[in-house]
Image 1 (cartoon, one colour):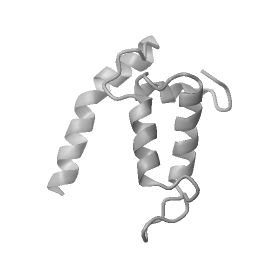
Image 2 (cartoon, one colour):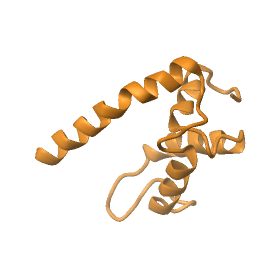
Image 3 (cartoon, helix red, strand yellow):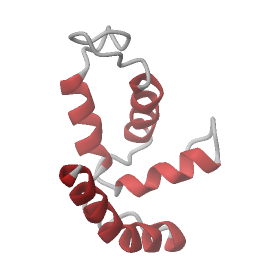
Image 4 (cartoon, rainbow, N blue to C red):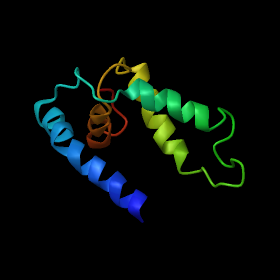
Length: 95
């Protein structure tokens, strides 16, 4: 549990910055970019197989990967990961 508590504290510390990006719509000064998440996910899951990893169910990663791919295709690779909230607000549309 100490690792979970430390992780939650770190997430809590960055929430105000993410909220400001979302409120202002300015995603151009990322602490963590869409591209980092996109590339990291690609390194964790084979492109052709999102259903099974080494004994770990990774099916939940499919929609996350699709969301990241859409954002990269729309030119948001270097933008803050908080831009993904725009896709959740406007499903099926480019941002």
